[in-house]
Every structure is written in C-alpha cells, then in structure tokens.
Amino acid sequence: MTDKNQNQGFSSILGFLLTTIGFAVGVGSLWRFPYVCGTNGGALFIIVYVLVIIVIGIPLLTAEISMGYVTQKTAVGAYQTLKPHSKWYYASYLHILVAVLVNGYTVPIYVWILAYIYKTATGFFVGMDAAGIAESFGALTADSTTMFLFAIINWAIITVIVSGDVQNGVEKANKFLLPALAVIMVVCIVIGLRVDGATKGLAYMFKPDMSTFSFNAVTAAVGQAFFAIGIGMLASMIFGSYIKNKNENIIKHATIISTSIIIAGIAAGLMIFPMVFAFDLEPGAGVGLTMITLPNVFNYITGGRVIGTLFYVGFYFAALSSAIGLAEAIIAVVMDRFALTRKKAVAAVMGVIIVIGCGSILIPGFLDNVDIVTSNYLLVISGFLIAIFVGWIWGIDNFLDAINVKKPIARLWLKVSVKYLCPIAIAVIFAGNFI
Image (cartoon, rainbow, N blue to C red; front, side, top):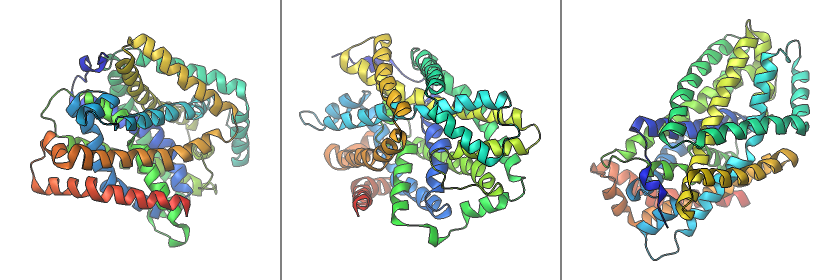
C-alpha cells in the first residue's frame, strides 16, 4: 500500500483553517442550522447547540484533527498507526460511509441554490406572494429534469476543483469563497434587520421559551453540532494529516474552527428568522426553509433582484466549500488505500456520490430521512468511537503529549472531556433517540 497522502499538504495553517471552516460552514450552517433551529425551539436550541460545541465539539474536533496530524495518514492508516494489530481501523469505515452519504444525499440543496441563482437573476420571483413562492419551490423539487440539469452542473464544478492537488484545488478555492460569502452575508443581515417586524425573529432566536423545547431538541442540537463541525465525518482527520508543521497548536485551531461555525450558524439565523416573522412564515418549514423564506425578502427590498442573486451566489460558495472539502477527504482515503492516481480516485468517488445523489433527487423523502439517520445516529456513533479511541485506546496522555499540550488547565479540560464527559454525554443523548 502506498500512502499518497504523505506528499500533500497545505501551503500554510491559514489554508488549513479556511478549508476546514469552509467544509463546516457551508451546508451545515447556512442550510441545516436554520431549519433545525426552526423546528426545535429557537433560542433554547441555540443555547444547547453552543454548549454542545464548547463541551463536546471542541475537544472531539481536537482529537479527530490530531489523529491525522500525528500520524500524517488518512483515516484507516491513522487508526492502524496509533493502535497497531487491532481492529479499531474498522471505525474509519464508518467515517468514510458518513462522508460519502453526506456528499451524496445533500445534492438537492446544491441544485436548489443553483436554480435560485438563475431564477432570482431573471426575475422569476418578482410579483409572487409568499404562497406562490412556496408553491414554486415544491414544483422545483418535483421537476426531475431541472433538478438533474443543475445537479450535473454542480457535480462538474466539484470534479474540476478536486481534480487539482490540495493547494491548487480545495485550498485556493476556499481562499476566495469564504471572504466573498462573509461580505454577502453581512449585507443581507443588515438589509433584513431593517424590515418591519424583523424584531420578532430576533426574539425567537435570543429569547428562550420553555414551551417550545423538548429532549428531542437536545438530540437535534448534538446532531447539528456534529454535522456542522464535521465530527466523525472524515474530513477533519484528513485535513489534519495535511498540516506539516509539527509545532502547531491544534487546540487553538479547533477552537477557531468551532467558534467560526457558531458565528456562521447564528449569522444564518439572522438572515432567515427576522424575515420569517416579518412575512408571517413558518419557522418550522423544514429543509426548504431558506428557499421558501428569502425570495420574499428580495421581493420586498429595493434592488432585491441584484442582492438576492448575490446572496444565492454566496450561498452556493458556502455549499461548494463543504462539498469540495468532503470530496477531497474521501478521495485522499481512496488514493491511499488503493494506490490510485488522483484522476482515477476522483472518478471512482464522484461515481458513488452521483449514484446516491440520483436517489436523493428521485426518491421522495430520501433527503429528509437520510439526513436524520446520518446526523442523529451515524455521526453520533462515529464521534463516540473517536472519543473512546483517543481517550482509552490510543490513550489520553499519549494524545496530549503528541500534540504538545503543556498547560495543566488545558490538559485537565481535554482529559475530562474526551475521556469521560464526551462518551457519557453522547451515550445518554443517543439513547434519548429511542425513548
């Protein structure tokens, strides 16, 4: 077996941060966070979500990145290096499965965004009321010809980008995509907050209401945190193996990434929920919330056609950064395990992703159901395995020593969280799925 991953790396730690943040922010924060938040109580969900990221997310992200960083290998090789002559490398296959599923079943989101770029730019939504916009979204999802047309465009874009090496493909793309997205999001938030009735959306996001909360919301918050950060989703481990400087502060970088994800999720909420309440829409509208809500905003404001087009372009940038980051991680594993060239690995990986994507486009309920199974079950199990492996199998002190954690308070925090708190919390919350 040849480890193709050994010769790859980011040009700088900034490249690692932008690529990892881009992977996490896109679909996880801009599409998934608003609709999951909207169906789980608003403010209290956000509070639990932030706590989960601080208590569980940052330590587990540190652990996952460290497995790749210390070994300089992809997922299977990382497990085999850290615990030779054991079956623990089987856990890596779950990480790979999750990554392939997420990159496959989320394709309708990319299709919706590309379609909305075209429709907004051509004035398709101009003059429509809220009911008409909702009906047009339903018509789009049922139009398989249009869905496949934009899906092919999306798959082609991803293929072109990941066909380049790490620095000239994924890293270079994210250095442009993320700053552009940030500017567009700020413009949309400022405009949206000026609409009459927007303050109701702020109250929904930041004023807790116990009557809207349940234990299911806790489970959803954990699933969302794991989905957004990408814990157990392969990419962070692979990107960690691309860091070549052996003196990097992995805890600091994991904290920066996690903080960026919290900010991105709240920013997405600030774009969506003020408008939901200003136009008397339903915050629990589900997976299409972003698509059903925002065209109303762009119809309302001066210059909305231009601003709306810019927003959907920015939204696609975010989604694309997720897709290429995840695809790169899968491709790295395939290159490593089967000693393939990048071109052959890209063809194999994209072929599987396209097959799953076709199912997501053609089968009603596929997206919703696979999203629930992946986020609330597979990702949580995947994160649990990482916590057990790093805390108990590799060994918590070996882990801390390997990433040069010297400060007693940092060592204590990671030791308690990774070894004890994370496995217990994940197990309890996971069990709640069956109550």
